[in-house]
Length: 453
Image 1: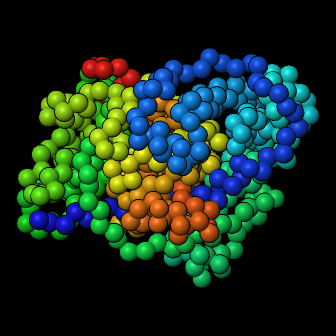
Image 2: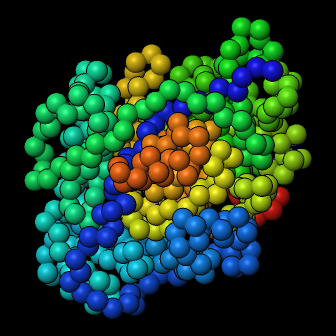
Image 3: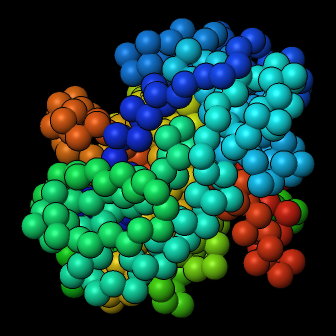
C-alpha cells in the first residue's frame, strides 16, 4: 500500500493569541440591543449531532442552546454593524461579542456612540476607525510582500484586532523573526512570536468527508504520495450541477491547467480508490485573496448523499446546514474534518491576511478570519459553521503537524493555543458566480434543502 502523505496546511493561521483580546474590551454603555434584525434560521437543539454537543461542552463550555443563541446574535450584530458603518464610515471602529455574549459597537467619538447606545448596544471608544485599521493592514501587507522571501517567511499572518485598535503580526520564534524591522504604520503593532513548523506528519484518513487527490493518476507508478483534504459544503448552481466547495491549495494543479481528479480513499488499495469528482475551479490568492476550490461531483458522489445539505463530522454523524453567515469576532464556531472531527472555538479575528509561498516561490496573499478551533493536517477544505450556518472553509492552522488536538493544545498553550485560518463562504460564493461567465458555478449557493438542484 502506498503511503498517504498528508498535505501540510499551506496557510498557517494567526496565533490564537488573538482570542485573548476578546477579554479586554472596556465598555462605555450597557443594555441589551433593541434594534436587532431578524434572527437567522437555525436547527432546533435536538437536531445537533451528539458528537457536536460533546465538542461544544468540551471546547466552549456551552450548552447547545447557548451556542445556537450566540451564533444567531453574532449575525444580528453583523447586520446592524454593516448598516451602522455605511451611515458612519469615519467613526465606526468595529463590532464584536464579549465572552459573555454581549454585543459591542466600537466608535471613535461620543456622538456615534450615542447612536449605537440609543439602539441598545454597548459601546467602546476607540482611537482608530475600522477604515484606518484596514488601510494600515493593506500597507503592512504590501510591505511584507515586497520583502525577500528569506526575511518574510517567518511572518505567518497579520490580523486586525479591533478590540485594542491595533494590527497583530504573527512571526515565527526564530532569529530572523526577532530581527525584523517593522514599519511604523499606526500607533501600535503587536508582535506575537509563534513556534516554528516541524516536519511532515502522516495521517490516516477516516472516510466520510475525507478525499484524496494527486497531480497524476493514482495508478501512475512514479507517484510517491497523495494529498489528503476534507470536503466542505455541498452546493449547487443555476444549472443544477452537484458541487462541493473545498480549499484551493488542496488542488495539486492549482497553478496549472489540469483538472485533478478527486477520490474517496480506499486505504487498503489506494490506486483503486473510486473517483467522486474533479476540480472544476481553484483559486489561491488572486484579486480576491481567497483559497477555495469547486469540485464537480460525479454520479457516484451524488448517489452517496453529497446532494444533501449536510457536513460530516465525528463517527459519520452529520449536521444539516440551514444558511450562510459572516465572521464576527467573538462568535462561536465549530469545524468538521476527519483528522480532528468536530472541534469548536470562537472567532478571534474577523480579518486576517497571510502570505503564502507556492512550490515555485510565488508569493500569494490569502485573506480570511481566525478562530481558536483546533484543526489538524488533512482538515483543509473542511466546513466551518456558526450555529448551523455555513461560515467558511478551513485553509490552514498552527496545529497542522500535531498528531491530535490534545497534544496541540498542550504544546501551543504558551503561545495562546490553537488557531485556524478560515476563508469566509460568502466571498467565495460571490467570486465563483462573478467569474463563471454564465457557465458552471453561475448562481451557486450552499445547499440548505434536501435534493436541491
